[in-house]
Image (tube, rainbow, N blue to C red; front, side):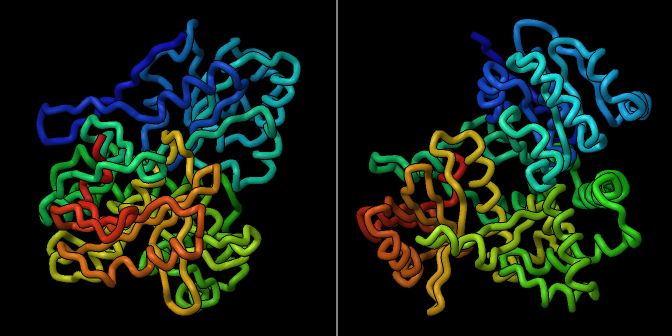
Length: 430
């Protein structure tokens, strides 16, 4: 048995104060290494992938580590992919594999010759599941794990169980603390990118985000596609950011970004492939309708979202609607992060009817059981705040488990047996 705690060392405050942060996805990674020949840890740049795979030995024997961010290693692999893979050890970690897509079929051939669990541990800053040639190369041989920016629980040293509690059979205990409004707004603006949390001022955080986006533009997006006008990508990202939490309307985006729809869709796919934006599809009882209906769009981090919108804590205090949109994005991403280590492994959706009934987030587990989450930035709730959840419960029928309204107040409010108002802090409680 392999027992391992991976600690990622990031300074969260100015000076010499450091917080050792355990990544909750580690158990999934360790399990995959025992029975799968290739494991890909992917996610946006600077979420801690390289640190995760280097922080300790992942197995009984040392692993060779090579990164394709190194120009010499990248050149060697490109000049002779077959010879490069043939010269690797029996357990190897290859970092930032999106730089060299031609190595995937070579890894496939090596696995087919010698199928050893945990032989290849890969990291990438592009979603191979959205790049058909790469995903097809390792079908049936590759397990994909996604590492997001820090969750609130990871920053606090707590392994959150909100998702599993929400989808569990037992009646939950919803008691939890509520952050003050100032604490919450600071949380939203900071986000969860590890290097950002090491910066004491908003000005320094803004400088990091500026450099971060430039790096993605000049390295990852340029590697993934041949684009004549790279300046169009930041313009599109700005337009998408202004519509975070809204329906993805390509025709309207095309007009706002001054890009043909065909070009815009190709560029948007690159934003999705580099994990900057996330789509949330509508829930419907008919599985086919989920694919064809219009999704919502979110950013992967509220720190990045507020940077791109030029939003500060002071502005969030002054503009309630803006705070509500950012909070919805925040809860969506916290639930997505928790889903990567939850036992329930739910899919996330939203729900909206033609008559205007709506639920911000719908979680469906592998057994088809349904739970709903509404997000409110207010400190008080009214009966009208649960009408969407009540309508979803009727639509889901016997598959319905429960619904909660996450809000910024301090009390658990029972609207019905399986319908509660819950303090936001319960989202990151153990």
